[in-house]
Image 1 (spheres, rainbow, N blue to C red):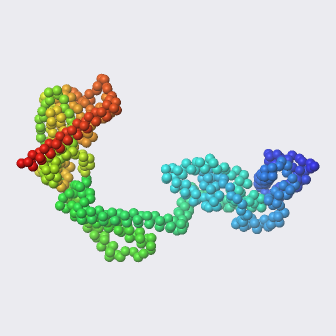
Image 2: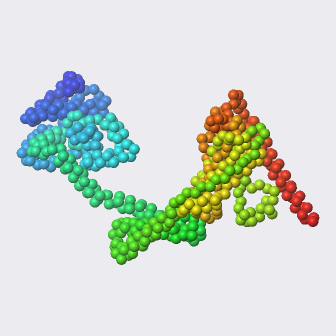
Image 3: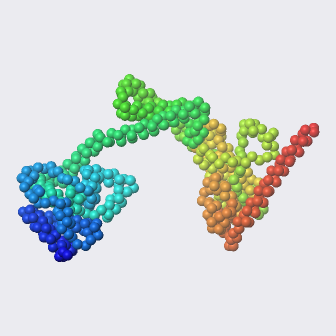
Length: 571
């Protein structure tokens, strides 16, 4: 049986054998005597006691026991080191030496309170990976531009990472072993830092503007060193990526030129390419190609020269390319001015058409779904031979130019509807503008109470676009009922009228049309006092009936055509 006593090491209670206590007491007495002449002797001895207490806790936990024995004290002393091991070193030589060598241990992640701009997160990470804090701060600064992710990450690390509050924490942060030699070297480093700080008080007292200047200069120097090293590889990778992009541009420009000039296909029928659809179109496309291709090729040559350190382009070749590019740019500007000259004047012509009145004063406005065919199209498709008695539907939902038909519905002062068409176009002068407006064609059709409108204004085939558009004013008698089809509202601009809004008011979202009433203040949505919402089965039944009716009409047309053919053959 051994006698045990209870001791308190910096607030931690331990049960220790009496012999082990005497050894530990003598050891700590030697430590306090050795550091007694230091200015921070109390802090150092407190940190050493804390470290000893941590080691005792680890030993007790690992061996699952409650009492510290003599062997445990010897183990701790061997790991911490004895005072006599380094007491005879020359203190003056060690203090004069600014480069310290430590037996490095395992680094722990802490926030550095001695080297911080905000909270010490960047300096703590830099100490953990043994790199300069500048690079970590630069990485966080750059990450702020990626949707502020760097700021969020910094705040999280600020909360999670503990601060190094004791000397032992600061030593573990820098990877210094937590023994007597480590504490002694850390103290000497701290004293040396204090002396250097005192020697550099004049530098610390300099104005802030000079400190900022030195900081920016140091930052630029580190950035320069970075780009001279690892940055070269990154620059080359970026250069290769940019080179591939410009190679793609060059191939795309060549393919587009061949498609337009060689095969007369491509975007020349699309807006705004339709503006230059004239006798100079091929020249304009070629000049535009040269003006765009030469800069792309020049950039490719410059990137290849920089990446592979090849010989730069010959001066005479460079001068020739510059002259060709300037000439092509001048010609392109000249063509652009020529095209713009065709839009100097505006012409407008109008015509009035009196429509038939209906007995019940109800009018249906619908989209004309019959395909518009020119004389050449009729001959090419052989309409009379192949589609006699049939209706060809318009399924062309794409249109290359902006919408050029606008319908405004107003109140009429007479008892019948009136349609006023105003054709507007641009031209080089007034006569040319009026001629361009005159050469446009628009189709509308009245069948009893149904008025059908085409969705586009037609102009001469292959002619240049001159901003042709049509303003239609449809005047409807007072108190007339106007039923507007949804397709008409979707394909033609109706000033101030929305079929969808009217359907929503009447809670008829599945309806294909909306009903309006012509009032003194214009066309107003007719609001039903009792709204009947059709079920899905009723809607499906109505659609099936409509489809059956359409199929029957088409079948009757086919039978009529076959009968006509059989009669012709008998003759």
